[in-house]
Image 1 (cartoon, rainbow, N blue to C red):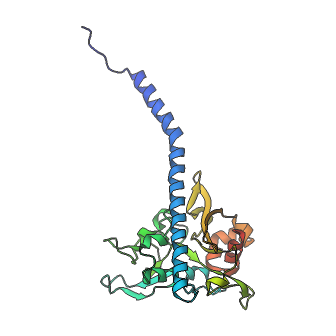
Image 2 (cartoon, rainbow, N blue to C red; image 1 turned 45 degrees about the vertical axis):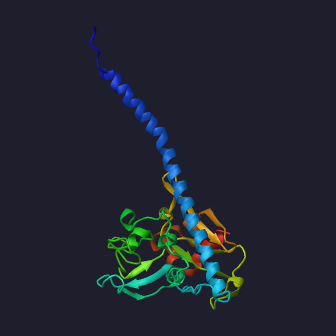
Length: 268
């Protein structure tokens, strides 16, 4: 009886080549599936926040959770949730808050803090653009036991006392303007501008948009006044700031309310 021979070197190389070819074909499809799952999960979070906002309004004479962004100060203040002292014991560590949408958690309307964060958001350690880069990812704000709100060491290179949410919260008033002529923030649900964005993904630079396409930035999810959560492509920096290089260097929409409102209005 003849002994069975193993694979020859050429046969092994052919098999390896076939596997590599299959991987090259399948990997982009798998990445697309994973991105679609993150996008859908993010939209589900926004839908949960919409329901939470409506519950809050029902219980508070149509009032919205107070927004600390007033339409003409720094837009980044709208995603602040708590300040904490991480040297203190958990439970004794909160020094201020809840703020902005975190009120929904503080009032036990939203029970899972993961709902305040896009699953596609970057960790700071994965995407550092400057010394002021921050994270809007859930894992950046839990302690070693998985408890929220906290601030882990990799959440940012500054402001370790801050607990941030993963979404901007800026309800656009239908009629009022600020003294600077910019859109004002609505304090009641009935005053929110029809078709406007109330909540949307946080991002610092175009490349750090949480939702990707082909390895590059694709866009963000936005929650509209009617409660719908919709994916929107983000325009190039120059379309919002007039100077792409300056926008890229200064994170214009985070610090400049005029740039922020142009971004919001581009998503209508």
